[in-house]
Image 1 (tube, rainbow, N blue to C red):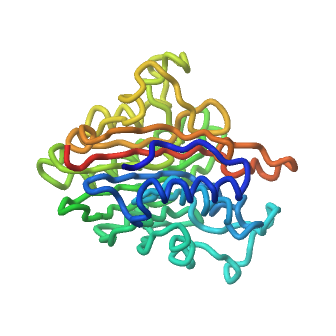
Image 2 (image 1 turned 45 degrees about the vertical axis):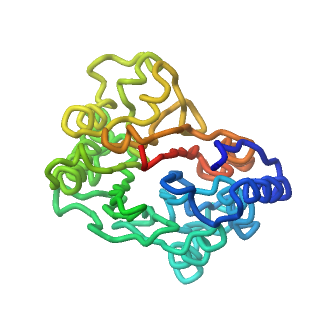
Length: 329
């Protein structure tokens, strides 16, 4: 049987040991128990900038210990020179071009890059073949999906899993705002994220009749808060930071996995106190969940870079989310 979430590992050696034990406990099958699927989502900040110095060894060993079947990585492109905030020449960037090589180190043979307009793509890696349905970048001039999104499919045990990945606009002002201060004062960033979310949903799950009864998961860095967590935030009820998730809850069949699993508990997904990373599932997929959590362990707990380089953290400024499914349920 598959292990539950493993939260150990001060060093690469410890991670290797735990990985060996995990392998022994799963008979070293190299794949899932029949019908079981583990999904790992994580915003790895600037192409796992923190892992460049050790050739991603700690990152790879940690992923191997988790033994995911499908991974979704946000900010999956190398941008900066190791240990600095200096932009790296495009010709020297390891990622995204070498995700296939990196993914093989933790047991994934397939990889896929979603649509993107800038340095912040999402990448899917998998033990199963990945089918591109749509790479989403929005439409000029007013419906640009800034960091891009994607709709891909994975076939598992004869069932089709639809994966929607996204990373919305992060700023307080609207994309391409001429007067950034004025736009920020008018909550332009929140309204722009809402526009992105509407576009993404209307070009993915809304295009398929009966999607609530199909297997869909939507995940990413939403850069938005949900009123489900307002027992913690205590914002005004009309706060525009809720717009994105209000739209999802009111216009799609998606279920917020972490909120459903831990009602009344607040689980930050950043180095601060913000839950802005989400995994959503349709009811048909949600009922197949057997475990889910935001993972904070000795490796994934965000630690601010001591040089405070452009707000960089180790290993990332976000925390990963793991979800286990039993597709036979």
